Image 1 (cartoon, protein in one colour):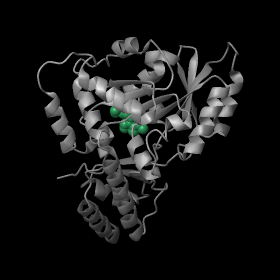
Image 2 (cartoon, helix red, strand yellow):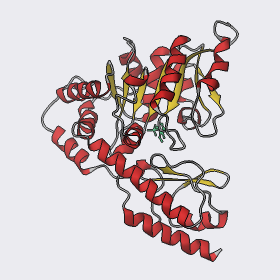
Image 3 (tube, helix red, strand yellow):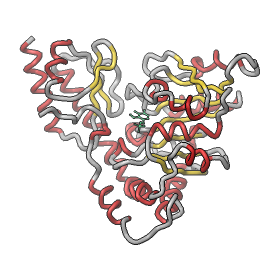
Image 4 (cartoon, protein in one colour):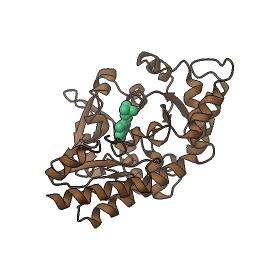
Length: 338
Ligand SMILES: Cc1ncc(COP(=O)(O)O)c(C=O)c1O
């Protein structure tokens, strides 16, 4: 049978403690749409841990990106982001549909934006013939698994703010980034001056559920949530999962394991003479594989070709050391056969 283990961190099962929290939340009636005590507790926990002013729970990461930015975008606005940002490549134009705003994609080899990338887009400011940049969006860790250091985020936030823009962080895997850098969630968000965060859950052991955190005020968010069909009636079950993840630092253990397994996988690949295309800094590994070897591996494992001979393998909290050793043994036999 083909294994989906390395296809994505989304393929991991729900962590047992998260499942227990869902079951425990399933007691008696509770007000819907986030007006229940669990939702209030989870919002206040995330506010405490990050210094955010507002927290909203919703269903998907795409929704978190779009709804997080929507209150700050008009149809004449644009979002500056990397050309490989999930927002640009894998969200089917959701941002454009929901807000009417454009995306200005910047070519970045490793997915990391710098102030030098952003600056050229700021000159159109005030010109009525051109879309007006309103948000800079970065992904932490990037879609290549690489990391922004706090000072790099701060530099982007400062530039954005000097020009009246906001900084959004797609943190679908922020726990993995914080674990890799040895930093708290607050050190990677509030302390870097960010304005909007999409905080992932499904890629760190949750069944489903993501969050939007804001360091800026808006009264519009409930309307955007409702119009984009993201105002969850049974919100207590999303909140319960976030409480399980963040109340006792469960997130840190899960993210550390995911990252450690990626390092292990990278070592095994390197020992077999496989080149890794990008530094392995979180839980993604991008090996360069000869096509015949990739074809044979794909009979046994689901994973995706990223570009040319580069493929993506993801690890998660649920990847076991022995899974990596079995994968390496298979790969060795295919390499020997070609
Ligand atoms: C960087 C990044 N952002 C956001 C998402 C959110 O995706 P979804 O809408 O599938 O939850 C993903 C999922 O793969 C992602 O990798």
